[in-house]
Each structure stands twice: as C-alpha cells, then as structure tokens.
Image 1 (cartoon, rainbow, N blue to C red):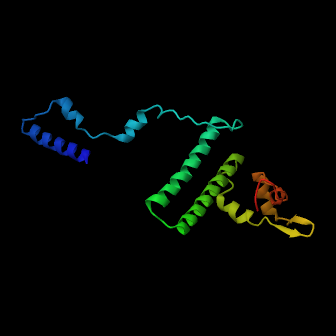
Image 2: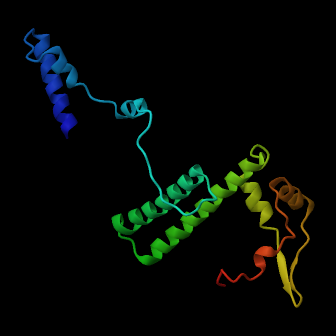
Image 3: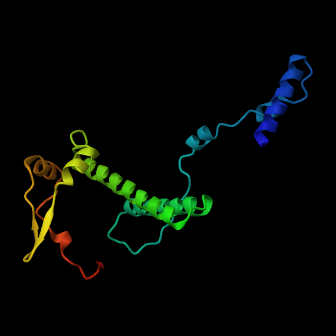
Length: 176
C-alpha cells in the first residue's frame, strides 16, 4: 500500500519534471525510489544474535542451532496447519505423518552425503533396497533374514549392519 503511494508520487514528479516544473529536490525524488529488500538484507553481515540455553554439553553450538531450527520448523508447521487453516485433528495427524516422512527422507539424504556416496546412492536406492532388510521372530528371539548381494553392498556403503538387531530389543526408556 505504501509503495503504491510512493510510486504514484514518483510518476507525478516525473511528469512535472518532463514539463520542466519539478517540485521535489533530487534527494527527495531519490527517496521515492522503490527499495530492493533482498539487496538490503544481502548487505547485512549478520542478522543478530541468538541465545539458546541448553543442558546438552555434548553437542556443538552448530548442532544445537540445527536442533532448534528443526523444532521451530515443527512448531511453525503446526501453527500454520492448526491455527491458520483450521483443519480438524485427523488432517493435522496426516500432515504430521507427512512431516515425519519428509524429516526421515532428509535425514537419509544427509546420511548418504555423510558417507561420501551421494553420487552413487540415491534416496530411491535406499527406499527400494533397504526395505528388503527383514527380521523374523522365532521362539529364540529375533533372527535376521539373510540379505541379497545388492542389499548387502548398499548396507556396506552406508555403514549399516543388516544383522544388528539391537533396535528390536526392548529398552526400559522406550514404551512399546
């Protein structure tokens, strides 16, 4: 709204100047020039200071910041879908599951990049190949099902042991 008014003033002054009857000084006329917000932000060296209080001394400042950004993203996600769009709980639940899937997909891509195989391994490779890693429950507990060579090769590239069933063991800190 404000920029439209400035643009109208600028156009009127240009017409007056074309007839040799400008009212504004050159400095006032230059002030009517629209501002490029992206360029102004790019000129700034930094945007401010962020202070986060945490008890996670095992993480670096960068890691804590990334966790904070992720949490803020989740909160913003729920604010948009809950408050702004006024969706019901079932839709919010489905959107949350989509958000979890997107987060997991991003983590898979980060894991691929961390191993240095981002050129030879794609997200689709992981989804199509790693879903074949299976375990079956027997009377003696869980047993890993042998994997094919291609699956074993991908697991080797990513540093995954398909025979490690430690995630299937009950833990006291996790409810099942």
